[in-house]
Amino acid sequence: MERLTPRQQAVLDVILESVEAEGRFPSIREIARRLRLASPATIFQHLEALAAKGFLRRARHRWMLTPRSRRDLGVPIVGRVAAGQPLIAWEEIEGHMTPEFMGARRGRFSVRVKGASMTGEGILDGDYVIVDPDASAASGDLVIAYLGAEQEVTVKRLQRRRGGWELHPANPDYEILHIPHNDPFFRLAGKVVGLLRRF
Amino acid sequence: MERLTPRQQAVLDVILESVEAEGRFPSIREIARRLRLASPATIFQHLEALAAKGFLRRARHRWMLTPRSRRDLGVPIVGRVAAGQPLIAWEEIEGHMTPEFMGARRGRFSVRVKGASMTGEGILDGDYVIVDPDASAASGDLVIAYLGAEQEVTVKRLQRRRGGWELHPANPDYEILHIPHNDPFFRLAGKVVGLLRRF
DNA sequence: CAGCATACCGAACAATCGTTCGGTATGCAA
DNA sequence: TTGCATACCGAACGATTGTTCGGTATGCTG
Image (tube, each protein chain N blue to C red):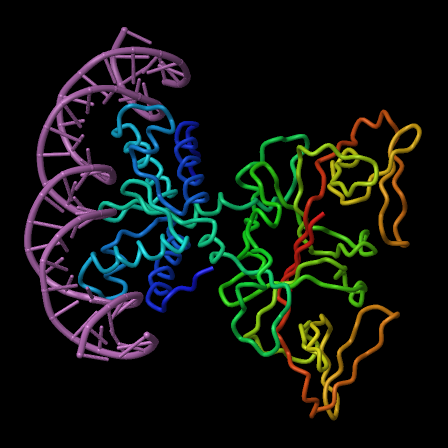
């Protein structure tokens, strides 16, 4: 993959910043102003260079980002952390830490975990769990469920049992919940597809 | 907060889809084409309505997203999951699963955790850890460190001790690492600011 | 030294854009 | 029935845009 010149990187940074902040691809003259350049032609040439290297696409009179440049909006996932290197080599980037990477899609949602019932599986109090409400949960899956008349929300591991389901905590202090087949209150909210913790 | 009419929502969806896919605010005629409308004036009126309700901003000849509409790009973090509601009420959305929320900032990076030395604190084998290389780590912090001549990378909890540091695992099967003050190989890669797991 | 890539300028043209205007149609509430 | 909000049309104007052209300057490399 080709590298960018410092100037091309600067132009791309301005573009990404604009997309990030206001959801808009800046006009050529706008980029020029931010970089204190006088001629739109200068930026135009940089855009062409960026397109030639795969960071931008052009259709008719419209410039847009590519998957390649969209990645810079996220945090890189590094394979090996090179010894003492403040800069991260392109070759060692295995992916990017985008919301999509952790399963964020339209239609899904996220809930904060309350309680310590799943600490045994590394799900702590205060963690954020990403839920897919459309996925059909099978036995053994981590699920979010509504329980009881209060319709409380819980994270548990689902197990099919004769006569109904069981919701297994991962903490010896908590008990397995037995759900009869005809429980009027029990309903699955969805399957857990991702987890986020902030320190 | 004012609600959107179905048509306004449709227009906003087209805009968000375009920003999401190609990092570009679509032109008025482009939106019209996607919605199979013939006149740009129609879309223009919808944009004005969206702006009046706070979903868009206009500066001179430029339309852009607002914080309000940018939120729809991410996965909502729901406070209470309403019983049986397939749709999520606006009032219960506490935030959004954006890159910023995940701790993604320029300069940070992410590494995959190998080994089970931190399972006691809910950090499992295969988890992704978000690292801030610029944050100064204090005693008690979760850190990423380079160790030994091989400069292996480890996640551990840092403790100051007379004569150096200690790196504490959170798993009885692993031992505390004692780092003398003058260890030529030991170096901190950064502080752990986030954690991410995929199921 | 010549050659080449990078980086910039200013002027101008045509394409595209946002915007305005005047108009029609529908459905709902007073 | 009269209003009013919503939703759409087509034509046209001027602003802004991408784009081209010809040109200068610098620094690195062979």
